[in-house]
Length: 95
Image 1 (cartoon, one colour):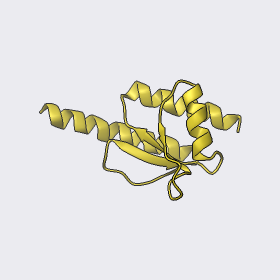
Image 2 (cartoon, one colour):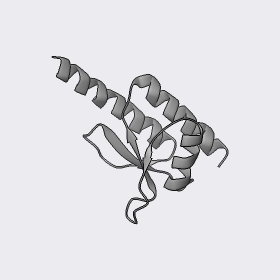
Image 3 (tube, helix red, strand yellow):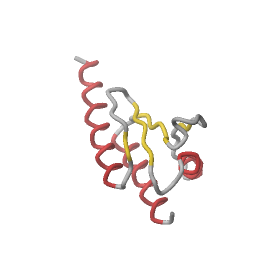
Image 4 (spheres, one colour):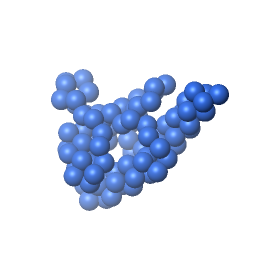
């Protein structure tokens, strides 16, 4: 029951986060894991990673040719994901 509860929460939070990011114009690759890969046409993955880090939001970025435009976002709690999407929204407003 505990495992099912945790995985259900991750799926729900992942779905909501994907919807929020897509609403901000992101491309989000399909995922059934506890993370997503997302990219924005408005800001390169490396710059988005650095600016989120400066804002205190940690994501991962890989400087590899096929995925350098993407950031890897681990699905956290609802409040953590709200903090992420809020920070992304503010960054894109000034992009």
